Image (cartoon, rainbow, N blue to C red; front, side):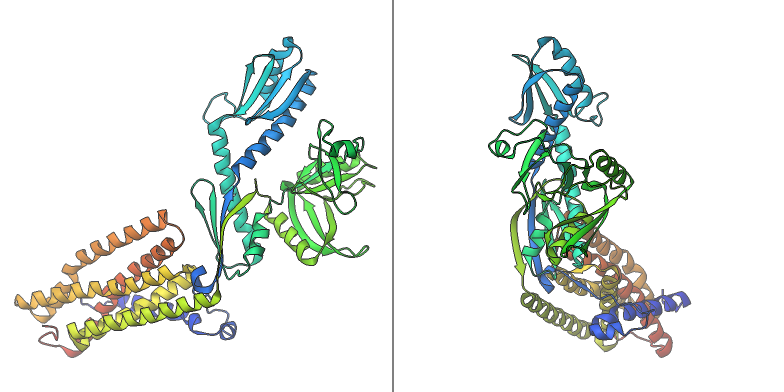
Length: 533
């Protein structure tokens, strides 16, 4: 165990060089980091919300609104399917979480039921021939369509996952570094954005559904009657732009925002003002081209979140797959809309349940307190080791502890793990636990010396016989940290991540570095007894 193997020396040297290279940027100013050669790393510790300040939002995915939207879409699907079969009906509406209607001719009920069961909804996963929508017949020639509960629960869960990913893309577009976006419960999402001091800006970006659709304007509809509540079947009344307070548009969308591949803020050279340029994918370009070709001379409405932002005339077919949205945008609002369109539309709206702002001053105070705690803990450990095992053995433990801290900082910098205040607590705990391996090794050496072993045999036994205990102790700590990382959230994950890195570096430094230093000392000094005896 005390042989100075070449691989041990190389491994220790590489570890120290690695630690210095990746920990160094943390000690430099931003200007100095920019001046580093290209081959040197520039990543620094990524501070969490509680250390650098930022915004915290607790968002709830509105699954009730999602259900209502799906039911509204189902109404249009029912209207289309029965219209194709020329089956007369009345009373089509959403009632009590289901779609209900009355078939005019009782002889058409079997055909209507068969048509709706075959074409409404989609296949139900795990059920052969099953669909996620049930169609049941009731008294008075009525039919009822409703979602299968398990199917909608799965769709709601999917909507939460999709919302979480879209939130992440939107925050990334803002340039916020290392946001924490975690799911809480069934339909809640926690967003912690370090460095983003304006929660209102964050809410405006995250809270907007950004659902973009293109509809034909219903030119035959009377606006006044529609405002009074008499909207033609197959159409809908929505708020308008600066030119017209309301529009009646066809409910069925020609093209949807899911077909967009890019959106960028721009400037209208002819009319002046900010605009948003967009481009469709192949399918969207084809559908948009067909729609504009078939409807030259008519108006189409660009609808964002159920509000018309523009309703231009189709003067000629638009077959290039690109276009622009204008609507009295400012530079900032056009850029924000472009961000939303690039990130994608949320499946349903988000409700803000809680919001907090952590000031940069509070974060600076937390960093200062963390530094003081770390220094005090390190000094206390150093004093204990020096008093317990002397200047030589205690000093070697302290040197290994310094390398351990260097490796932790380097590992967290290169992985860009977020350091939080609980993470600092994990770092302090790691420093305390790190010397535990040295204590086990040294105490075993003392036992061997008391048993009459020579110095070299005592040192060898100290490392070899304590190793199983060291591995067991650190393995249980590592498993506990992994469990906290898997099932915890936010600060708990930060603590677990720091502790996990610390466990791995502690075993390396406390065993290998201590072993190399003691072997080098023993080969040089050739002592007859050990100073800790």
